[in-house]
Image (cartoon, rainbow, N blue to C red; front, side, top):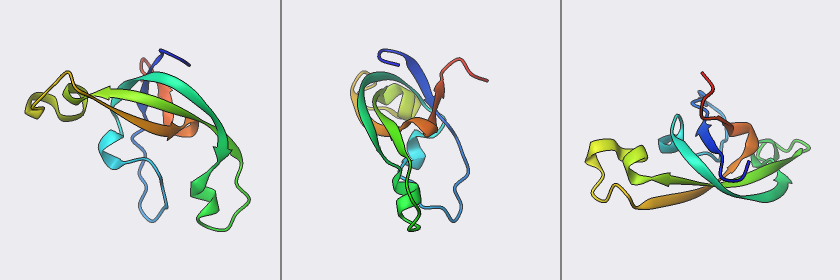
Length: 92
């Protein structure tokens, strides 16, 4: 998945403990690197046995995140996101 364009899934999360910021949901970025498998904190929060999932560091431009309101559109933000929140950017 390195250097691959991905989209953060825009999933509804009412009442769930999630570790993916709402402002990233539905946004497209570039996988900067794979960080390895870690226990899913969304399961740990409820005392469940957590499966180990890959985590990716994804780079987003300010233009992608904030559109025309971005003060410095080419600046970037990197976020560590669990694989189950990501899909290929060309997915419908």
